[in-house]
Image 1 (cartoon, helix red, strand yellow):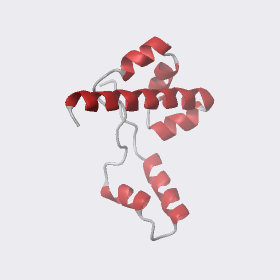
Image 2 (image 1 turned 120 degrees about the vertical axis):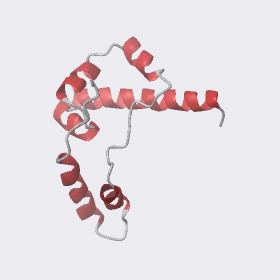
Image 3 (image 1 turned 135 degrees about the horizontal axis):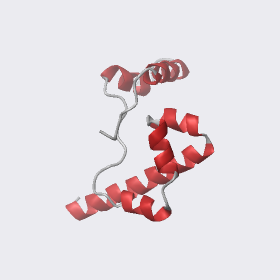
Length: 106
């Protein structure tokens, strides 16, 4: 994959992510804040973006979303299919709920 193709893939991923995030926030703001791992302020900013602003953000060559689990244990809990899947997801949700959101304004 060359650089131009990579940038195009990133832009498409960004657009999909931003559209989904805005839809989630408009549907149920509190659930979206939890699921996206963002602050109330960030949720309000995303919800207030015009379509032109959203497209401009999506055109960045940097991914706007990132993995929320920095710990191997969380990744293992999500991907472990040998154990009770529902229990594993519940434990992961509890652990992630206890993590502070990432302050992207810094």
